[in-house]
Picture 1 (cartoon, rainbow, N blue to C red):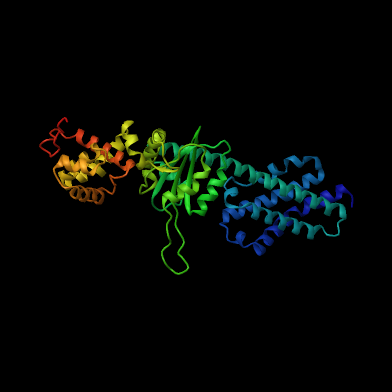
Picture 2: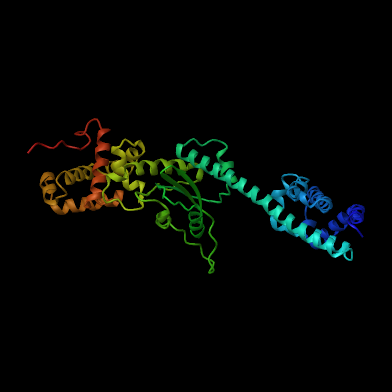
Amino acid sequence: MNKQETLAWLRRISGDLATATLQRLEDSLPWYAEMPPARRSAVGLVAQAGITSFIQWYDDPTSTPWIAADIFAAAPRELLRSVSLQQTLQLIRVTVEVTEDRVAGKGRNLRDAILLYSRDVAFAAADVYARAAEARGLWDARLEALVVDSILTGEADEELPSRIAALGWHGHGEVCVIVGTTPSQFDVDQVRRTARKLAVDVLIGVQGSRLVLVIGRAKLETREDGGEPDEVSFGDMARTLEPSFGPGYVVVGPAVAALVDAGQSARAALAGFAVARAWRGAPRPVDADELLPERAIAGDPLAKQTLIERVFRPLHDHSTDLVTTLWSYLDNGRSLEATARELFVHPNTVRYRLKRISEVIGWDATGPREAFILQTALVLGTIGITDPVRRGLRPRRPR
């Protein structure tokens, strides 16, 4: 049988080949049998297009560059999202097997042509899926940058939850924002691998020399003994992710309840990052709340309010004696004896009051760094009091 006779024969049996292919698909591939009718029809169109394209290619092998367009243009665009590359290759294999069985005995040249054509189709399918994945990756990167920018600017809108869901965010609870510098060779994949090991979701934003990570707790698996899993603190997460940042400071914002509230954590982290150099001994990473005095001095209203709410107001509401003692202790260079002389009390009374201060607010005034935080809080809180004498804050007499 010459080539023209073979072509005529192939055209006559093309319909039978398509029918036999669909039957083989249903018998051998469970995923095909479970498909909705519309998608099964689309897969059938792809199989039919593949057989027709093979006949055209056999007639003119130079048409190879058009294989992908001939075959995959027959299917709707959503088929790429519902049929994986692995399933597409299974489809190609079944089609080739059916065709080989039908053309057995028609000559070695035809069999070799089928094998060569199937190889080209497989590469064409891989190319189609690679292009789709690349386009999806670029879109996801742009969407992720948009979400991170919305979080940083605090311009959350009604579309933010849907955008977050489109990125595959699975966080179920608290969220934290980490801000640092971008390394010269930034490995995005390494950050995502580290996040997976920590069982957290992560959004990555590269804004020039600044790197922003939004991390959220993902659902943890139950332990083998049936107990509740141990959640890693955001501080520990930040220390694990710290090598991913460039040189300089890494600031961790406070935890917030959900991703839609991440703007609060972002504002604190950005404010802390802007003033971190003012603390010579700042650790890496450092909590934004540890930079409250520097942030307040720089004009951050959130830091001012936080210091007043966490330090001054609890002490003032508990006892004005505690406020007076703290003022005196800090003004006298953290000297117990000098404070006792000014207040006309015993040094042990000063020790007791300092202990009560630590119990009420959680900060210890005897340390140099915490003393600076407390003194800043006292200054900010006292500014809002119009009559310090009436409220128990007696002005100091000049010595």
